[in-house]
Image (cartoon, rainbow over all chains, first blue to last red; front, top):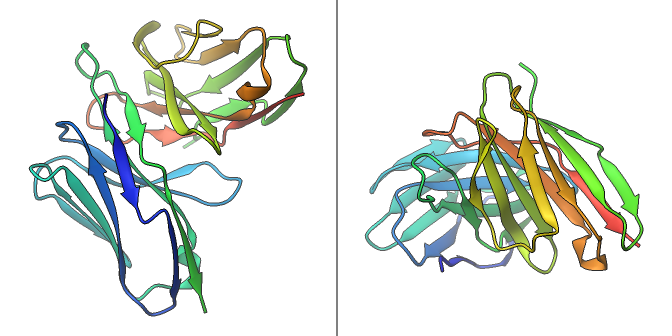
Length: 115
Length: 112
């Protein structure tokens, strides 16, 4: 059974600081997603990482994937209050049918950025 | 471009009743996946449909079922509701291949 573990689960940081959220998973997969969720809201797609060594950046967020280590990271640079949210990683666990999607999510990291 | 539309947004049901939730995907998207989100279990995959066929199913009891219509709209049904079925139900649509999927706003189901 695939397990996806994020750490930390809770993170409180000051504006302007840098930090990294880690996502470890227990089986082979070449497709990993990062999502953001604001309280009471749905999931907003941030990044899709499709191969080993993939790195994507959007504003103050940068995600990377190491499929050999089964590890993805979400790095936050010079945090601002607007980035406060819960961040989820998800691994695409393919079914027997090609293309069939099945996302297995991490527990989520609740990020609070204080002024 | 319209997003993924889920109806209703909120729903209150009584134990033992059944409920049907609806998801209209983005135009042109043929894959629809359903997820349950609860504080205790987090986000869990329910099932995925493509071209009216269920291709993947999560570890949920048979009380949870779904279907997809020829226009790609999908419904999920939960029969004999239990208190533990209270959750945010999210659907996501995608083009199936190399797609991150776009989530709808969800239906918040409360079972009393």
